Length: 309
Image 1 (cartoon, rainbow, N blue to C red):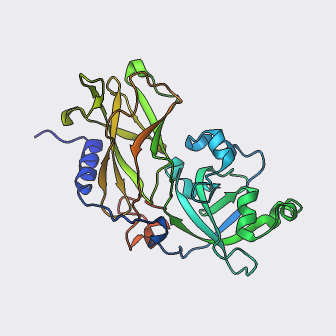
Image 2 (tube, rainbow, N blue to C red; image 1 turned 120 degrees about the vertical axis):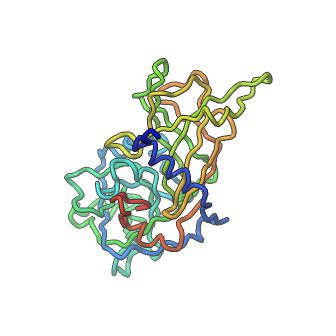
Image 3 (spheres, rainbow, N blue to C red; image 1 turned 180 degrees about the horizontal axis):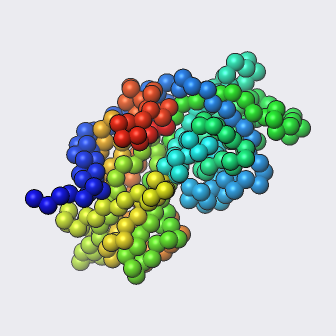
């Protein structure tokens, strides 16, 4: 028997793991992930920080400029240890002050849209916030905060990963500029991923157009797996993308088991274009299992990979 290539073997293992269903809840407030035991910090983002455009994670500037008000989230950048070269894009956290009675009792909720400037955050666990988010976290007014030195605008915090909740957005894909349609080169990111999950595997297939011109599911044999781009775990790519229209299926995991999610029909039209954002029609609402307290703080598995940080 011929040896199975390493990437294909890993994908088959993930597919088998996907047979275990993830727990689901009706409300995002019922997640079971505790506060992480180690210390972190929150600092102010510089006004001209590139993260404010959302480009590092594929979010459009208009969405980032208005914040993620759906669910009460602010935007944030994180240090390299959290960002994991893009794998943390779209992850949601709750932050609260450590030992400061004047701070907001419930802290602030943030969604990661980029990595923090290296000059401003060091170590493995730093968050950088907009002035609105920092003011909400600390109960400090914007005018007072603007008069403070940057050194005074860094505080110790507790944090935990929480489910993202979008009432008016489905899981979407952004086609990256590196994609080349006529060469079968497809590179993409996932946006607006709800719940408290990571994407562990992605497959793409042609959505066959039937006689009624509706995009129908293609045969299972036509599915082609995509791989994480080396050096950018949050980016998925293939050099063998079929002709469009295209549909997707993904494996989502919350640190224990996983499951397949299938798009009902075509996600990318036949004339898809780099830079375009397309709605998958899928909603993700799964939360981490009761053991996620360690995993959400970055516990490594036996292969050294970190999940649900």
